[in-house]
Image 1 (cartoon, helix red, strand yellow):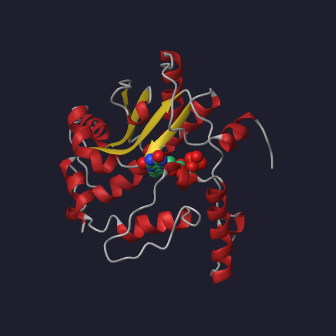
Image 2 (cartoon, helix red, strand yellow):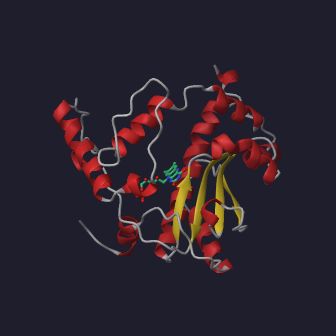
Image 3 (cartoon, rainbow, N blue to C red):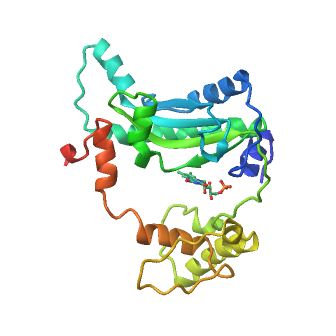
Length: 255
Ligand SMILES: Cc1cc2nc3c(=O)[nH]c(=O)nc-3n(C[C@H](O)[C@H](O)[C@H](O)COP(=O)(O)O)c2cc1C
């Protein structure tokens, strides 16, 4: 594989959840934001909120960014141009989510390349009410993801990934045999077990009453963890529809 400073920064990045207290300088923060802004965009519908309030920030991170889908700003531009939106919220969000996500990842890589660590926090859409209130957001702005950032105070190992033949499908998508799936699962699970990820975190997703726990920290690993997330959580679409509506987006109206 080719190596250069950009690739090395991307390949050596890992999520950081413990930070030194030192506040990154304004120049560092501006660089991270500016590189984020330079990401490819469909409609520049991503914007960034920043809190330097360590006491309050997740993981006591010196920087907490909340990356938002920002249709408010775009519609201000349209207004100036004398246009009214015809696009459905589903259509608009599809592009806004992409713009915001590519921008967020650019920030992660820029940060990594100058010695900062970071970690995404995926709960932002479920915390929309609190975030909207905290930052006094107008309607048509939806918090997509949070990103903690600062100088690392830990050096975790690189987390495994699926094998390449379970990830890249050239010309045609294959049908997986059970053996193909088992092999890919083994790579993830043995990697996380070797690193004692869940034992160190002392966390297994609890099973609901009536389901017998058959795992301990010698066996509980990534594929079980993620399966439990999608097998137990997030059943009610109302949670997210309600928060979208609170922020002035209606998916219901699109259907
Ligand atoms: C959309 C998204 C949401 C995430 N949410 C969380 C989170 O809530 N808490 C957390 O500790 N890590 C979170 N992460 C970080 C992942 O756990 C991490 O990227 C993954 O385990 C791979 O590890 P690595 O980043 O060290 O390679 C999130 C990552 C993404 C992309």
